[in-house]
Length: 228
Image (cartoon, rainbow, N blue to C red):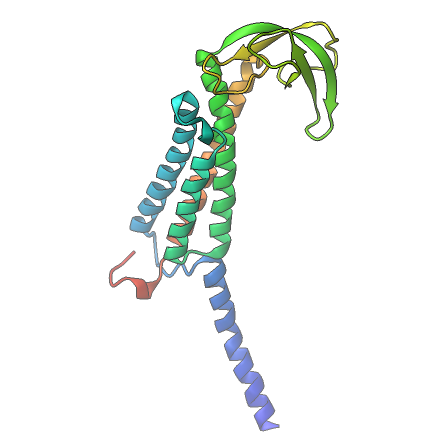
């Protein structure tokens, strides 16, 4: 009976240690007291620089870089490098996953916003005839198939400015990008591009915040001889 009691007590004493280990692996050890100024600055710098590179590369590629990178591949490469950096720091696995997801979303969203900005600056508006109007159930919007314009392949589909109230044969304005780097959308509403820019900015802030938390919580007492 005494041996059973000793074994139960040993398991109870080991439980807090296991829970602490899991917390450290999943969320980071965060073994600091007070405000870890150095790590806070490092996290903000790394997250901010990564966000700038992801968004900046999307705009640079859309404006005049290699056409093969217009869909966000360069941004995903930067995110992968950041995830590797966080793994080297032994940051919490949950936080690393969160940063990876936010970074991937940022890498895919940035080219779409860049397209709108570049078309606004360099695009030209041309009229096209609507050949058909279909409802797109997946995204809950209408898609217009257009024709009768030399710079656009017959049957090209656009959704900006397209609605179920538009009839076949109606003239629909399109925005063309002279070098042909961007897809041909319909004319956006005045606040549509502004809304996309605000969403990109909000996602960037969340990404930088997640990266900062991951770096700060990666601090381990045995990893440094000085304070945080």
